[in-house]
Amino acid sequence: MRWYRLLAPCVIALACGSLHAQDLSKVCHATSSYDLTMQPGRLIFDRAEPAPTRVVIASGSLQTDGQTVSLNAEDQDRLALFQRELLVLAPRVKRVINHGVDVSVQAIQEAAAGLNLDADTRAQLQQRLQARAADLHQRVAASQSTHDWHGDAADQYANQVIGDIAPLLASSIGQQALAAAMSGDLQQAAALRDEAANLTGGFQPRLQQRLQVLRPEIQALCPDIQRLADLQQGIRASNGRPLNLLQVGQ
Image (cartoon, rainbow, N blue to C red; front, top):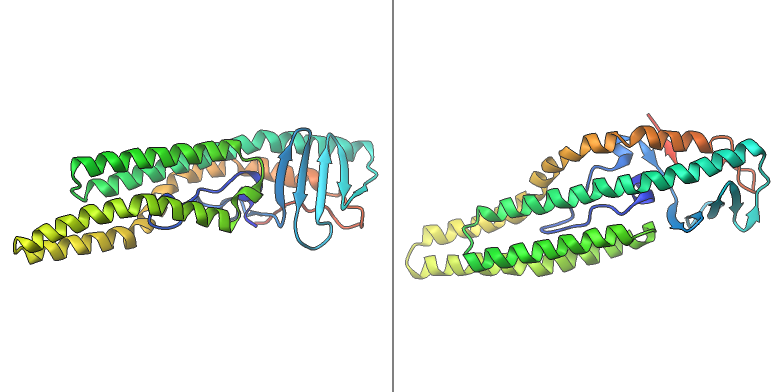
């Protein structure tokens, strides 16, 4: 599982395919096999396998697979600090994600600006984009669990966005192409069809390039993620295995 999903939702598709921020696994080399749910006063980590499959941290206490783990004072302090620092880090990750949403919306608007859309279509597109972005910002703000953003949920939201925006663009371009063909300008009609194909096929690479602006913001999170990894070191689950809620490589 990608580490950015452990802290907050990923950037969900806004149009023409899935748009992803650069994962923390690539920038910070941080990974985790757990999902995370943040509840008042405690953190819950869970996964299908291997054991422990459920880890609960609450104010310096540790429970794994339903068993309370005996901790010395130092380990209690480290887990309490782990909990506090993760809760501070989570909104910072969300801010990066929200910035990614805004960059994505701007990229879609700029791509649409080159389509020679009529004023009504441009207004509808702007309205729909802003509504979808506002909805996604609200979802990010409200989400306290990575379970909210598993593949099916992300794909469903992507399909909703595409279903909302793509027909609007296709209709406008199709009408322009039809009008050109009926007027005898077959070259213009073909150019419009090519323009539509280039929009859907070439948008995602251009967006990925635009999202490079997020890289310094993600890099700024890396020391804090390393700090979390260091705090968990030496703490073991009830089965004697290292806790390993996250791993940071080179």
